[in-house]
Length: 321
Ligand code: COA
Image (cartoon, rainbow, N blue to C red; front, side, top):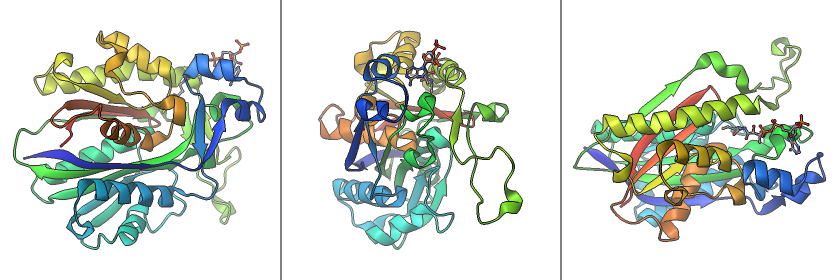
Protein backbone atom coordinates (compact mmCIF):
# COMPACT_ATOMS: atom_id res chain seq x y z
CA UNK A 1 0.00 0.00 0.00
CA UNK A 2 1.17 3.53 -0.80
CA UNK A 3 -0.19 7.06 -0.45
CA UNK A 4 -0.70 9.78 -3.03
CA UNK A 5 -1.53 13.49 -2.74
CA UNK A 6 -4.94 14.05 -4.35
CA UNK A 7 -5.50 17.70 -3.35
CA UNK A 8 -3.68 20.73 -1.96
CA UNK A 9 -4.61 24.12 -0.54
CA UNK A 10 -2.92 27.13 1.04
CA UNK A 11 -3.82 30.32 2.88
CA UNK A 12 -1.76 33.33 3.91
CA UNK A 13 -2.74 36.48 5.82
CA UNK A 14 -3.84 39.52 3.83
CA UNK A 15 -1.29 41.92 5.37
CA UNK A 16 2.10 42.04 3.62
CA UNK A 17 5.18 43.36 5.41
CA UNK A 18 8.04 44.05 2.99
CA UNK A 19 11.70 44.48 3.93
CA UNK A 20 11.37 48.27 4.03
CA UNK A 21 8.61 47.81 6.60
CA UNK A 22 10.90 45.62 8.73
CA UNK A 23 13.61 48.30 8.42
CA UNK A 24 11.21 50.69 10.17
CA UNK A 25 11.26 48.35 13.21
CA UNK A 26 14.93 47.33 13.47
CA UNK A 27 18.27 48.49 12.05
CA UNK A 28 18.41 46.60 8.77
CA UNK A 29 17.76 47.20 5.09
CA UNK A 30 16.18 45.57 2.07
CA UNK A 31 19.51 44.92 0.32
CA UNK A 32 20.99 43.08 3.36
CA UNK A 33 17.90 40.90 3.85
CA UNK A 34 17.67 40.00 0.14
CA UNK A 35 21.37 39.22 -0.14
CA UNK A 36 21.67 37.15 3.07
CA UNK A 37 18.29 35.35 2.87
CA UNK A 38 16.54 35.88 -0.50
CA UNK A 39 13.42 37.16 1.31
CA UNK A 40 11.59 40.24 -0.08
CA UNK A 41 8.40 40.20 2.00
CA UNK A 42 6.30 38.12 4.38
CA UNK A 43 2.59 37.88 5.27
CA UNK A 44 1.69 38.72 8.87
CA UNK A 45 -1.54 37.72 10.61
CA UNK A 46 -3.55 40.66 11.92
CA UNK A 47 -7.07 39.23 11.80
CA UNK A 48 -6.12 35.62 11.00
CA UNK A 49 -4.99 32.93 13.45
CA UNK A 50 -3.12 29.64 13.16
CA UNK A 51 -6.51 27.85 13.29
CA UNK A 52 -8.30 30.13 10.80
CA UNK A 53 -5.45 29.80 8.27
CA UNK A 54 -5.43 26.01 8.76
CA UNK A 55 -9.19 25.91 8.15
CA UNK A 56 -8.94 27.99 4.97
CA UNK A 57 -6.09 25.88 3.57
CA UNK A 58 -7.96 22.69 4.51
CA UNK A 59 -11.18 23.82 2.78
CA UNK A 60 -9.24 24.53 -0.41
CA UNK A 61 -7.41 21.19 -0.29
CA UNK A 62 -10.65 19.25 0.19
CA UNK A 63 -12.31 21.07 -2.74
CA UNK A 64 -9.19 20.48 -4.85
CA UNK A 65 -9.29 16.77 -3.98
CA UNK A 66 -12.97 16.61 -4.94
CA UNK A 67 -13.93 14.50 -1.95
CA UNK A 68 -16.74 14.84 0.57
CA UNK A 69 -15.37 16.02 3.97
CA UNK A 70 -17.07 13.09 5.73
CA UNK A 71 -14.77 10.73 3.83
CA UNK A 72 -11.71 12.08 5.68
CA UNK A 73 -10.55 9.54 8.26
CA UNK A 74 -7.71 11.49 9.87
CA UNK A 75 -6.64 15.13 10.31
CA UNK A 76 -3.11 15.86 11.50
CA UNK A 77 -2.04 19.49 11.99
CA UNK A 78 1.63 20.37 12.36
CA UNK A 79 2.01 23.57 14.36
CA UNK A 80 4.12 25.15 17.07
CA UNK A 81 1.93 28.26 17.40
CA UNK A 82 -1.58 27.08 18.25
CA UNK A 83 -3.66 29.86 19.82
CA UNK A 84 -4.87 27.57 22.57
CA UNK A 85 -3.48 24.52 24.31
CA UNK A 86 -6.71 22.62 23.78
CA UNK A 87 -8.70 21.65 21.87
CA UNK A 88 -6.13 20.97 19.18
CA UNK A 89 -6.20 22.85 15.87
CA UNK A 90 -7.09 19.61 14.04
CA UNK A 91 -10.39 19.47 15.99
CA UNK A 92 -11.15 23.09 15.06
CA UNK A 93 -10.51 22.23 11.40
CA UNK A 94 -12.72 19.13 11.67
CA UNK A 95 -15.62 21.21 12.99
CA UNK A 96 -15.15 23.93 10.37
CA UNK A 97 -15.01 21.64 7.33
CA UNK A 98 -17.53 19.06 8.59
CA UNK A 99 -15.16 16.08 8.64
CA UNK A 100 -17.03 14.41 11.49
CA UNK A 101 -15.60 10.92 10.84
CA UNK A 102 -11.99 12.06 11.23
CA UNK A 103 -9.66 11.28 14.12
CA UNK A 104 -7.77 14.48 15.00
CA UNK A 105 -4.51 15.51 16.61
CA UNK A 106 -1.75 18.13 16.39
CA UNK A 107 1.96 17.48 16.20
CA UNK A 108 4.84 19.82 16.98
CA UNK A 109 8.21 19.41 15.31
CA UNK A 110 8.66 23.12 14.52
CA UNK A 111 9.72 23.69 10.89
CA UNK A 112 10.01 19.90 10.29
CA UNK A 113 6.37 19.55 11.39
CA UNK A 114 4.73 19.08 7.99
CA UNK A 115 7.16 16.34 6.93
CA UNK A 116 6.57 14.43 10.17
CA UNK A 117 2.79 14.94 9.96
CA UNK A 118 2.89 13.64 6.39
CA UNK A 119 4.94 10.60 7.47
CA UNK A 120 2.56 9.92 10.37
CA UNK A 121 -0.55 10.09 8.18
CA UNK A 122 1.14 8.01 5.46
CA UNK A 123 1.98 5.33 8.04
CA UNK A 124 -1.73 5.04 8.98
CA UNK A 125 -2.66 4.72 5.31
CA UNK A 126 0.07 2.19 4.49
CA UNK A 127 -0.95 0.09 7.51
CA UNK A 128 -4.47 -0.09 6.08
CA UNK A 129 -5.97 1.69 9.12
CA UNK A 130 -7.31 4.68 7.18
CA UNK A 131 -8.01 5.48 3.54
CA UNK A 132 -7.98 9.30 3.41
CA UNK A 133 -6.02 11.79 5.51
CA UNK A 134 -5.79 15.59 5.63
CA UNK A 135 -2.33 16.86 6.59
CA UNK A 136 -1.89 20.54 7.43
CA UNK A 137 1.04 22.77 8.37
CA UNK A 138 -0.03 26.07 9.95
CA UNK A 139 2.02 28.59 11.88
CA UNK A 140 1.85 32.24 12.90
CA UNK A 141 5.51 32.75 13.73
CA UNK A 142 4.89 36.51 14.04
CA UNK A 143 3.33 35.77 17.46
CA UNK A 144 6.61 34.46 18.89
CA UNK A 145 9.02 36.81 17.14
CA UNK A 146 10.82 39.53 19.05
CA UNK A 147 10.29 42.44 16.66
CA UNK A 148 13.30 44.15 18.19
CA UNK A 149 15.67 41.30 17.31
CA UNK A 150 16.98 41.85 13.77
CA UNK A 151 18.65 38.42 13.67
CA UNK A 152 15.25 36.68 13.69
CA UNK A 153 12.44 39.11 12.79
CA UNK A 154 13.64 39.45 9.18
CA UNK A 155 13.19 35.73 8.54
CA UNK A 156 9.70 34.59 9.43
CA UNK A 157 6.16 34.92 8.10
CA UNK A 158 2.71 33.41 8.72
CA UNK A 159 0.70 30.93 6.65
CA UNK A 160 -0.84 27.50 6.23
CA UNK A 161 -0.79 24.72 3.65
CA UNK A 162 -2.71 21.45 3.39
CA UNK A 163 -2.60 18.19 1.47
CA UNK A 164 -5.18 15.41 1.14
CA UNK A 165 -3.54 11.97 1.05
CA UNK A 166 -5.24 8.86 -0.22
CA UNK A 167 -4.23 5.23 0.11
CA UNK A 168 -3.63 3.43 -3.17
CA UNK A 169 -2.20 0.08 -4.17
CA UNK A 170 1.45 0.19 -5.17
CA UNK A 171 4.98 0.62 -4.04
CA UNK A 172 5.40 2.34 -0.70
CA UNK A 173 8.45 4.53 0.01
CA UNK A 174 10.37 4.44 3.29
CA UNK A 175 10.70 7.81 5.09
CA UNK A 176 13.70 9.28 6.91
CA UNK A 177 13.43 11.29 10.14
CA UNK A 178 15.73 12.19 12.99
CA UNK A 179 16.44 14.54 15.85
CA UNK A 180 19.28 15.78 18.05
CA UNK A 181 17.76 16.92 21.32
CA UNK A 182 21.20 17.94 22.61
CA UNK A 183 21.03 20.94 20.25
CA UNK A 184 17.72 22.26 21.56
CA UNK A 185 19.10 25.61 22.67
CA UNK A 186 20.22 26.51 19.13
CA UNK A 187 16.62 27.37 18.21
CA UNK A 188 14.07 27.62 21.00
CA UNK A 189 11.00 29.43 22.29
CA UNK A 190 9.80 29.23 25.89
CA UNK A 191 6.07 28.82 26.53
CA UNK A 192 4.62 31.63 28.62
CA UNK A 193 2.76 30.56 31.74
CA UNK A 194 1.67 34.04 32.79
CA UNK A 195 -1.37 32.84 34.65
CA UNK A 196 0.80 30.47 36.75
CA UNK A 197 3.87 32.42 37.91
CA UNK A 198 5.04 29.32 39.80
CA UNK A 199 6.34 27.91 36.49
CA UNK A 200 8.03 31.07 35.31
CA UNK A 201 11.80 30.97 35.37
CA UNK A 202 13.96 34.04 35.08
CA UNK A 203 14.99 34.53 31.48
CA UNK A 204 11.74 33.13 30.05
CA UNK A 205 10.60 35.43 27.33
CA UNK A 206 8.10 33.68 25.10
CA UNK A 207 10.18 34.83 22.13
CA UNK A 208 12.01 32.71 19.61
CA UNK A 209 15.78 32.71 20.21
CA UNK A 210 18.23 31.43 17.64
CA UNK A 211 21.91 30.95 16.91
CA UNK A 212 21.54 31.66 13.19
CA UNK A 213 24.95 30.42 12.10
CA UNK A 214 24.60 27.14 14.03
CA UNK A 215 21.19 26.52 12.42
CA UNK A 216 22.63 27.38 9.00
CA UNK A 217 25.52 24.92 9.42
CA UNK A 218 23.17 22.19 10.66
CA UNK A 219 20.79 22.68 7.71
CA UNK A 220 23.43 22.66 4.96
CA UNK A 221 24.93 19.42 6.38
CA UNK A 222 21.80 17.53 7.45
CA UNK A 223 19.36 18.25 4.60
CA UNK A 224 21.55 16.77 1.80
CA UNK A 225 22.35 13.82 4.10
CA UNK A 226 18.65 13.16 4.75
CA UNK A 227 17.80 13.47 1.04
CA UNK A 228 20.56 11.05 0.02
CA UNK A 229 19.49 8.64 2.78
CA UNK A 230 15.84 8.64 1.70
CA UNK A 231 16.85 8.09 -1.93
CA UNK A 232 19.26 5.28 -1.09
CA UNK A 233 16.83 3.47 1.20
CA UNK A 234 14.31 3.40 -1.65
CA UNK A 235 16.81 2.36 -4.33
CA UNK A 236 16.60 5.75 -6.10
CA UNK A 237 19.05 8.45 -7.16
CA UNK A 238 18.65 12.22 -7.64
CA UNK A 239 17.98 11.56 -11.34
CA UNK A 240 14.76 9.71 -10.42
CA UNK A 241 13.30 12.82 -8.74
CA UNK A 242 11.39 15.51 -10.65
CA UNK A 243 11.27 18.17 -7.94
CA UNK A 244 12.96 18.88 -4.60
CA UNK A 245 10.61 20.66 -2.20
CA UNK A 246 12.57 21.67 0.88
CA UNK A 247 11.71 23.87 3.83
CA UNK A 248 12.00 27.56 2.89
CA UNK A 249 14.29 29.17 5.47
CA UNK A 250 17.04 30.89 3.51
CA UNK A 251 17.80 30.86 -0.23
CA UNK A 252 21.50 30.31 0.54
CA UNK A 253 20.60 27.09 2.39
CA UNK A 254 18.67 25.81 -0.65
CA UNK A 255 21.55 26.75 -2.99
CA UNK A 256 24.01 24.93 -0.75
CA UNK A 257 21.80 21.81 -0.68
CA UNK A 258 21.60 21.90 -4.50
CA UNK A 259 25.42 22.18 -4.72
CA UNK A 260 25.93 19.28 -2.28
CA UNK A 261 23.58 17.10 -4.31
CA UNK A 262 25.13 18.22 -7.60
CA UNK A 263 21.81 19.30 -9.09
CA UNK A 264 20.50 22.51 -10.62
CA UNK A 265 18.49 25.04 -8.59
CA UNK A 266 15.90 24.75 -11.36
CA UNK A 267 14.76 21.45 -9.85
CA UNK A 268 13.95 23.15 -6.52
CA UNK A 269 10.65 24.92 -5.91
CA UNK A 270 11.39 28.26 -4.21
CA UNK A 271 8.91 30.85 -2.93
CA UNK A 272 10.54 32.22 0.23
CA UNK A 273 10.97 35.60 -1.45
CA UNK A 274 7.18 36.07 -1.07
CA UNK A 275 6.52 34.47 2.33
CA UNK A 276 9.75 34.22 4.35
CA UNK A 277 10.02 31.17 6.59
CA UNK A 278 6.47 30.03 7.38
CA UNK A 279 7.71 27.10 9.50
CA UNK A 280 5.47 24.02 9.12
CA UNK A 281 3.50 25.73 6.32
CA UNK A 282 6.35 26.28 3.88
CA UNK A 283 6.37 22.85 2.19
CA UNK A 284 2.57 22.48 1.70
CA UNK A 285 2.32 26.09 0.41
CA UNK A 286 5.03 25.21 -2.14
CA UNK A 287 3.21 21.99 -3.09
CA UNK A 288 0.00 23.94 -3.64
CA UNK A 289 1.67 26.64 -5.72
CA UNK A 290 3.58 24.03 -7.72
CA UNK A 291 0.41 22.07 -8.43
CA UNK A 292 -1.69 25.04 -9.44
CA UNK A 293 1.01 26.69 -11.54
CA UNK A 294 1.28 23.47 -13.55
CA UNK A 295 4.93 22.82 -12.63
CA UNK A 296 4.06 19.73 -10.59
CA UNK A 297 2.45 17.18 -12.88
CA UNK A 298 0.51 13.99 -12.30
CA UNK A 299 2.73 11.03 -11.61
CA UNK A 300 5.88 13.03 -10.87
CA UNK A 301 8.10 11.94 -8.00
CA UNK A 302 9.09 14.59 -5.43
CA UNK A 303 11.33 14.72 -2.39
CA UNK A 304 10.05 16.81 0.52
CA UNK A 305 12.63 17.62 3.21
CA UNK A 306 12.34 19.66 6.40
CA UNK A 307 14.58 20.82 9.21
CA UNK A 308 14.13 22.94 12.29
CA UNK A 309 14.08 23.35 16.05
CA UNK A 310 14.75 20.30 18.14
CA UNK A 311 16.93 20.00 16.21
CA UNK A 312 14.76 17.87 13.90
CA UNK A 313 14.84 16.78 10.28
CA UNK A 314 12.94 14.54 7.90
CA UNK A 315 12.62 13.60 4.23
CA UNK A 316 10.03 11.66 2.23
CA UNK A 317 9.35 10.73 -1.35
CA UNK A 318 5.87 11.82 -2.40
CA UNK A 319 3.69 11.57 -5.49
CA UNK A 320 0.98 13.86 -6.83
CA UNK A 321 -2.19 12.46 -8.43
N1 COA B 1 20.42 43.50 9.03
C1 COA B 1 21.64 44.03 8.88
N2 COA B 1 22.74 43.50 9.43
C2 COA B 1 22.58 42.38 10.17
C3 COA B 1 21.33 41.79 10.37
C4 COA B 1 20.22 42.39 9.76
N3 COA B 1 18.97 41.91 9.89
N4 COA B 1 21.49 40.69 11.13
C5 COA B 1 22.79 40.60 11.40
N5 COA B 1 23.45 41.62 10.83
C6 COA B 1 24.88 41.90 10.86
C7 COA B 1 25.55 41.30 12.07
O1 COA B 1 25.49 42.16 13.18
C8 COA B 1 26.94 41.09 11.57
O2 COA B 1 27.65 42.32 11.63
P1 COA B 1 29.20 42.37 12.04
O3 COA B 1 29.90 41.57 10.95
O4 COA B 1 29.49 43.82 12.02
O5 COA B 1 29.27 41.72 13.38
C9 COA B 1 26.77 40.76 10.10
O6 COA B 1 25.49 41.27 9.73
C10 COA B 1 26.81 39.27 9.81
O7 COA B 1 25.97 38.62 10.75
P2 COA B 1 25.78 37.07 10.73
O8 COA B 1 24.91 36.65 11.87
O9 COA B 1 27.13 36.43 10.58
O10 COA B 1 24.98 36.91 9.36
P3 COA B 1 24.69 35.60 8.55
O11 COA B 1 25.28 35.69 7.22
O12 COA B 1 24.95 34.35 9.35
O13 COA B 1 23.12 35.73 8.38
C11 COA B 1 21.11 34.72 9.18
C12 COA B 1 22.28 35.67 9.49
C13 COA B 1 20.20 34.66 10.38
C14 COA B 1 20.36 35.31 7.98
C15 COA B 1 21.68 33.33 8.80
O14 COA B 1 22.60 32.91 9.80
C16 COA B 1 20.61 32.29 8.68
O15 COA B 1 19.74 32.37 7.83
N6 COA B 1 20.67 31.20 9.49
C17 COA B 1 19.69 30.16 9.46
C18 COA B 1 18.49 30.58 10.28
C19 COA B 1 17.28 29.75 9.98
O16 COA B 1 17.04 29.36 8.88
N7 COA B 1 16.46 29.50 11.02
C20 COA B 1 15.24 28.79 10.92
C21 COA B 1 15.48 27.36 10.64
S1 COA B 1 14.01 26.44 10.57
